[in-house]
Amino acid sequence: MGESGWAAKRLLIALAHPDDESFGMAGTIAHYVEAGVSVYVICATNGDVGVADPRFLEQYASMAELRLSELQCAAETLGLAGLYTFGYRDSGMAGSPDNGHPDSLVSAPVTEVADRIVQVIRDVQPQVVVTFDPYGSYGHPDHIKMYEATTLAFEICRNGLELADTTTSIDFNCPQKLYYRTRNRTYYRIIVNLLPLFGVDPGQMGKNKDINLRAIISHTYPIHARIHTRHVSEQAERARLCHASQLGGLAQPSLLQQMQRLFVNPTVETYMRAYPPVKDRRVSERDLFAGIFQSSH
Ligand SMILES: [Zn+2]
Image 1 (cartoon, rainbow, N blue to C red):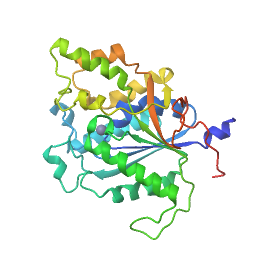
Image 2: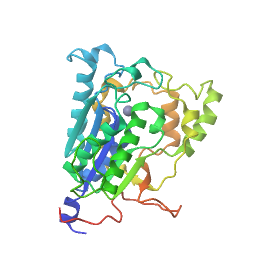
Image 3: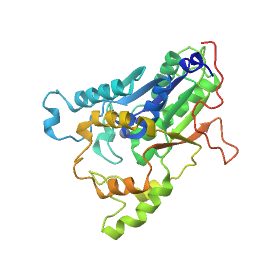
Image 4: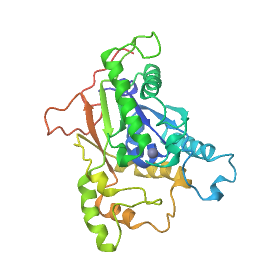
């Protein structure tokens, strides 16, 4: 495939919070940008509910303003071709009072969010779309909402359906593949078994004790694609550092972080292929663009 073939490739990644792109997929993004693919990111919320040390907020009017400026830093570091923000309010973790805010992403009708994603797909005309897995990586309601809305948007395109709120029909190239970013649960199973030996409850992890590793491993999805990102790890790390307010105490990594370093290879990012549907269980791709055909667009 020649240079021009790569230049025509477009990847759209639909996510929920400023930092989802860097904490989950920075390697994949940096890998494809380096290969000449135009990578676009949707960030549906402003990350309003993030918790940050007050010193990070000094120069900003709000948490949202801080988070969006960190996102802008990551977008520039990664070399995104475009960044779309939808401006919904961060819904917080499941069960938190922020879920019920009328402006929250979880309060928005899924058809409304899907409609906005379809508009971005019309703009970008990506061949490949990526979003969260059905459990939203670790059960975050905003992640699950983006999984639902992005899957619906993809289906609207593929089926050529009329949009819910407009009379516009699909008059553009639909994406050919849909992937869900999903972590390899095998490693997390080992970690869940080890943590209690150190007196740590795997059901209450993270800065806010709201990450339940047991629930995560009970939602396991097949892995169909592995993107190797060692060659861009420096750049991916720089993107992560843009989100300084969300990194917590870097000097003292948590036990979970230490175990992740031991068991999880951070330079391989794993994906489930949702479309085309996988019939052969042994599908093992090294490229999200494998098998796509180039349109004249
Ligand atoms: Zn998130």
